[in-house]
Length: 380
Image (cartoon, one colour):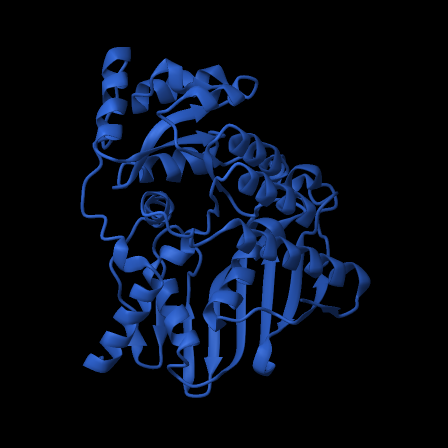
């Protein structure tokens, strides 16, 4: 049984990470709303704004926006779905009816910059293919809106620099959609690792892989910036950093064999890499678009703690030397968006800022460099 000292230590750690401020007890006024009536939709927006919540516009209505972010916004306490940006009129009409969005809050990519004149929208959430992140983050900042950008933040470090600079110039906040920083299972892995609850970490391993179907934009290097490393491997990169509380100092990498040359014509099919972390820790990562893997494992002096599955939206499971982890289910995306909104309301720093996104893009590029060269790449 967990001692009172251990319990207090866990509570303090989570509090220090800023989670204690996210009690999120209130129900959103947006929950379950659907209407074909324009006046009702306008009144909904006014009611949400009057309650002190910040309006979010989703840019790009793909599977993540529709399947995760929009439903999560029915559970948030500090922000709500205020607008959408889509290049497909049929999607716009569907979302308008389903979520009660006024016609004046629906934009396409040509009219996007007019969002600057819309006081209903405080935050723009960019959920587009990776190669489009930089353009729309910069345009959103220039329109006077705070921005959340999906991961990876961009496809090059240079693009990240331009995004950060644009937000600073406009005095707007930029955050990255790293949802797992709000999941209790990952918070526990952070606590165990950073507090050395089972002694010093000796080694780590993480793998995230699934079977990507032909025709996905993620298989197009021009759109994605790379293959599974950009989409899935970034979760492993993040985990190595937040479990240890450290950043890697060097990397080696090797591309796996391609068994489907047509499907993987421009991107890697699989990739294995190893980070050298401070203290002599080795962190082994694996990612693939033609495999199945979903785990995070830490070997410490006095035992092993791990998550499997590790990187899901829900259903994460974990165990350690003291037994199985048990935490209540949470909506990762709702907590993530609420924390960003709360940082604006409370005028405090964003917890997952653009600088973190830039750091990780630099690590991804270093892994690719090591893969292509076959040589160890040192990291700053």
